[in-house]
Image (cartoon, rainbow, N blue to C red; front, side, top):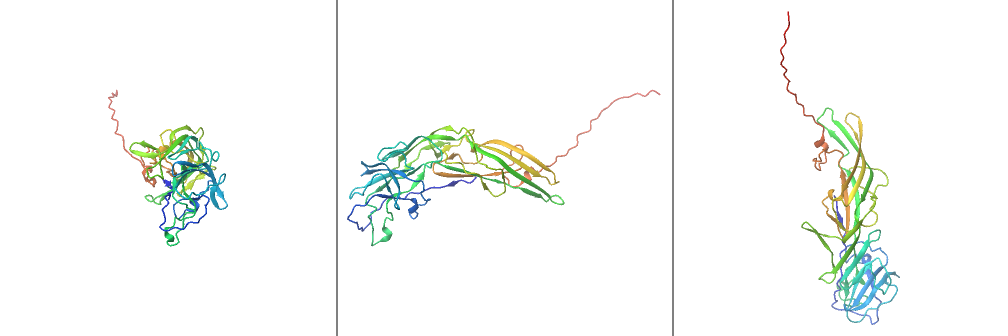
Amino acid sequence: MKKLFFIAVAALAMGACSKVQTVDIQKEINFEVANSLQTKATGSVYSNGAFGTYAWFNNTDDFMVNEKVDLTGGAWKTVDHTFYWPKTGSISFISYSPFAGTSNTAGTTPTITKNSITYTGVTVGTTDLMYADRATCSSNVNEVTDSDDPAAESGYSGVPTVFRHALAKLSFKVAANFTEWDDNTTTPASHTEWEITINSFKIGGFNTTGDLELNLNADGKSWDKPVTTVGSTDYYVWNNPSNPTATAQELVAAPVVLTTTPQDLASVTGYVLPQILSAGIQTVDIDANIKTTLSNGKVINEPFVKTINISDISTLKAWQINENIVYTIKFKPTAKADGTSGLDDSPEDVTITFDPAVADWTTVETNATIQL
């Protein structure tokens, strides 16, 4: 199993420059998102359309309330109202994506305060829900420059805004442990081949609706995510998961013949709710066929139809917030009937062998008389 993580790291605090030059005009507030912050943060280009933002002057007075921000004339800025940087004080920004509701009207998806971001009763689908760490700008970031020490410049042309994913992504790769085997203990060597065809691969049973509350961390920038503890391990998942999928999602458009190189199945549509993996909840339904060409040239075909708990196919115990999860599943075409063959990459442990023995003679004694 291969699990991949994508983590966007936010660079948020604005450091004051030792020597600054300011232009004696007011500048309109704009934003700088990940596509122009590659030297400041690791991540991908933001491409989720318009986003919403809230802002507070000196962390007290409402400055922006659910304002819509979009790319306009090469700059990310508010589109329904125009805002300018004040000459003193600071402004704290909290942004989310995609934009929902009406500018200058507090929204409900999510609900945002100075210290929290809350999603309630959200049904997950094809929308990538994202949130940015709080950015507090203590000076006019559009105007600050430092001609004496370019390395000390902020490097931003707007409010630094790096988004994180509130949901998780999920995909699957499939491969065969082996497709042929030579047994050199025979003369000549025996050659056996296996062809595994996945006819259907469905996932289902996972929860699609839940709540998420993010609270401002003590650092004043990042967010404390909700923690669910299973055993001795903490997992960052959504609260109150419910509404499991009614029908399984088919990830095979056409039969897939496995090779030893992992192949991508069709991507899981949209996003999944971050949740704990539990036996009997999230499942994979597999319909496959194993064609074996025996060393004597004969061919047998075996159907394989089974429902498997996703919690049983790897050590992964949860789908967590902001994770891009890729399962690589290897199919072993031969195995012991009791399932004790382990994860060996060769079929030697299931080679058919014989255990000959000779039963003891059964002694039968009898008496007979012959009349002469």
